[in-house]
Length: 237
Image (cartoon, rainbow, N blue to C red; front, side):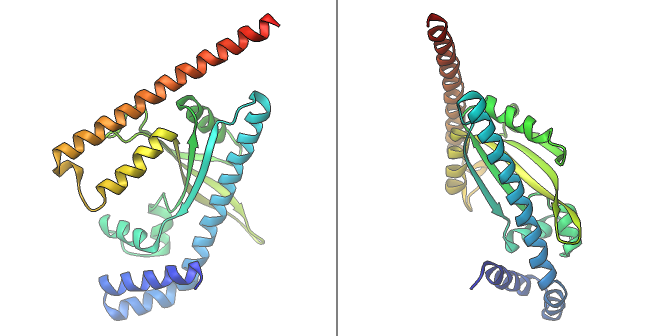
């Protein structure tokens, strides 16, 4: 079974659970093929964004003998997640609503070595001619209450089809290794449990996030020290 077929099976199950049968039948008939087409456009947009960061990583590797990007991940939001988000916002399921109101269907996560790399790469990405940044959320300078840290951009980029140019939205998340480690484990620990309702869990998660941020700061100081020592060694020769 292909990814598209799995997505549509999951979508049908969710629709049958939340809508009258006749309405589900009409929705699937009207949107099955267009939905798959729309998801293909989002995949194309993700591929373009990933390529842009691979190019930037290669350029910095040549210029500074260092790769600022540790890894790049991408994901497409599942049909269930899309419908659940629409339901939470009180929006009727339609492709037009999805495109207009859901900004994180296509997601690219860029894992960086240092916090300074995050801001440098985000700036380099946003200055590209075909990238239009619609929204920025800086959870590094202003972490969430539970300690979550990340830098988010909602970017609109064009994809070039055989007969048209289409603008698609992609959410780009920038994190250090420690931010990504914390966020992944926090999601695992908090799945189906609200840390806010368990004060000890909430406090521990916040403390772990603060420890991660402290490690990022210490590693950044070590990186600056190393650069300083390299400069002295070069001058000595």
